[in-house]
Amino acid sequence: MADRSLTDVGGTPGGLGSFLMGLVMTVLGAYLLTNQVTVASSYWQWGGTNAFGISLIPLLFGIGLLFWNSRSVFGWVLTLGGALVIFAGILTNLHIYFEPTSLFHTLVMLTLLVGGLGLIARSLRSSGRD
Image (cartoon, rainbow, N blue to C red; front, side, top):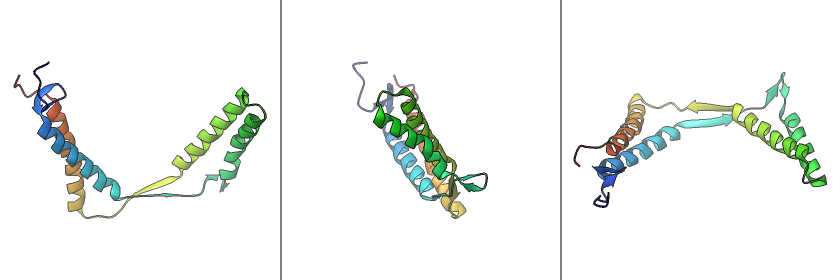
């Protein structure tokens, strides 16, 4: 192990160039792909009415209990549970859209992403030059 070179990636001989090229390709492909995505949100709906206000009730009661007694287990459960409900509500009401783009640009993005991942995987595999 002591005679390993700086170019040895993942404990295998060689592969630094493939790893770095794969990393650059993966980051570029992931950036271009996520740059084409638009994220929007909508109103919280529950039974046809806006439900965001009602999701604040457990959080506010929990915070009130914690101000009264900071060691209240029930206050901590309400506060953390209320925060979790709000976080889950935000995530479930997101709408994710892929912006229109040409087939060529989509293929370039996906090729960079998948090709980069392939180069990274290949650089971590032993090349047989021990």
